[in-house]
Every structure is written in C-alpha cells, then in structure tokens.
Length: 124
Image 1 (cartoon, helix red, strand yellow):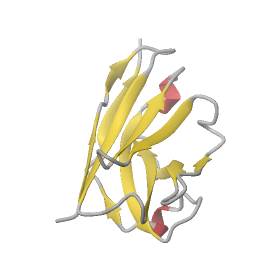
Image 2 (spheres, rainbow, N blue to C red):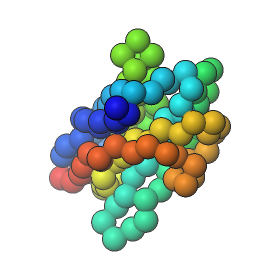
Image 3 (cartoon, rainbow, N blue to C red):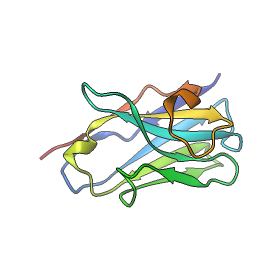
Image 4 (cartoon, rainbow, N blue to C red):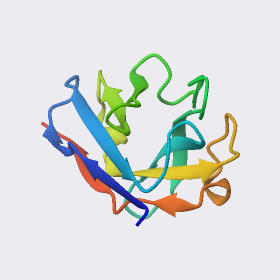
C-alpha cells in the first residue's frame, strides 16, 4: 500500500528551526520525485521544494531558498526538510507528495500521491 506520512511539525519561535520527515512506503525514491508543499490558512497550496528521483538533484522556490534544505535517505525511504530561520510567514500545513516522472517542478498537479500534512506554526 502506497503511503506518505509526514512528521516533525510543531510550534517554533521566529528564527528557530524544525526538521520535517516524509516516510514513504509502497514506492521507491529511485523512481519518484518527492516534493514539499505548504498551505497557509485561507491560501492555496503551493510547492516549495522537491528532490528528483534517481540523481537527487533539488529545486527550491525563491521563498525558501537558502533557509530550507531537502535531503533523502534511500535506505529509510524517507525525505527530510530542514527548515532554518523560520518566519511567521512560514506558518502553514506542510505536505509531502510523490510524483512519477516529475523533474524539478513543484506544480501540485504533477504529483500523484499525498501525505496527510503536518502543522508548522512560527510564533513568539
């Protein structure tokens, strides 16, 4: 059964850090690109970063470039999102998603499978 499970969300102060995890089962990171998306209250879901299947090259949206880092552990079939220098504007539900044949894009329509999301709140 294909499943994506996010974890690691929580409440953090501005300037703080969190690491999100996306544990995948029923699919291989060798063949599926994993993207991270976020949806703030009252706003549309937007893609922020992805790591390509195979060679693991990455793509970052300008809003998170330099602050967020995506990585993966193929042995654990898990993708991580290290988030540093967090801002209140980063507050959102964060989702990971898997797409077969996706390359360096965070267009949500390109992704086939989605996790349930994890809440990240940045507030003092």
